[in-house]
Length: 476
Ligand code: AMP
Image (cartoon, rainbow, N blue to C red):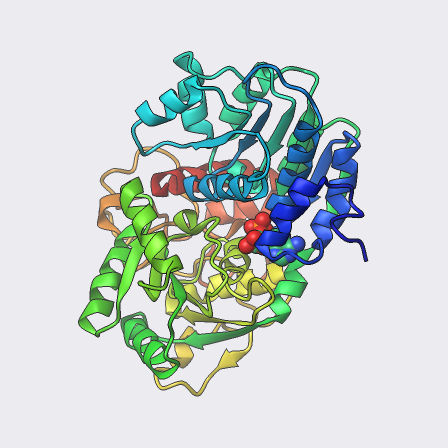
């Protein structure tokens, strides 16, 4: 097994790593750092939690450390899909570079640009950015990325899901041709492989396939429950298991707010984190959660992206995600830093198809808890049930006043509808990936023409991804 020393890192970096308590490199670090130090492009399939941030930031720092840079031009650009992840990457750079004379900063939207602009004026070596704010400040002439030597695209799959592809392409056009590229993605669908092809040159591909490993340390349980009983079930578990550090995932921002209020009524302290909250409120909630003041964080998927809190003992899928990959991502918020974790998922009658999709994609059957007090057998998937949403009583009513264009995939308003977004849901939208791998013969309950079209063609990925992205951007 290699050590950080044997990977060829300088003493000032090794000192910083030691202070972080890292003893040995993680697999992604072991595999990515040497080729990156050799100047190679790297394509890595790795999730948050694998140590991927150090895998790219350590070699970037090492190479910069060994070069003389007379000016303060931006030499490394790291693009991240969300503010939280961007902030975390910047914090990692701060930790790893503390014995070096290298400057770094993070920029993202949702906050005033003044402080960011003044800091940029003083010059910065490493810039971590979300795409929107980056392009905005480039457009205003505050940022020059023409001297970038390292370009890191983090969570590329999420970038695409969030509809950032055009922004990424714009950024690519502004970068110098000669540069080293690193692309990280939790999954490697065709679209990412194509994007990687267009960015990377002669890249080394690394797949650390962390899922199995992570999942092994997570005790998973699925509980079938009426929608109306979910809150009581949640409170019961939180109290019974004396939960001190948990993330509860809801599908909508509105649902997250409502749940926080309901939990308060039941004597459970919680804060919500989602895209409608100001950046200040998000940062405060996250800080309170990290330092233990807030035991329960109620989050939507996008806002939770990149939450990296080692002590999370429980993850609750209060609403099952309509994207199977999100389930894997959500439960990966626990069992971090070598610890164990528990992931409970609540499945109501309208969500059983989501469970089918999750189990198809993960290739596992999540253990069922059929003995819990609120057990509701009707929510169990029927034999041969298809993946995806099975019914949407409310949105099938003609109340979709705002609907103008194509219906949105995987609504953000299930039966517990988010009325402000009324009309975004199509009752029979099915789960893209689950459907694609599913057998079309069992069309029970769900299929209309649109889901069948998706089943029949892989081209369906584009519109559904775009639609999902629009939903998600609304969230962030
Ligand atoms: P990441 O996948 O980059 O989000 O990192 C996940 C967590 O692992 C962070 O809390 C890092 O500080 C931590 N970490 C990264 N590398 C190591 C290592 N080699 N040993 C122990 N912890 C690490």
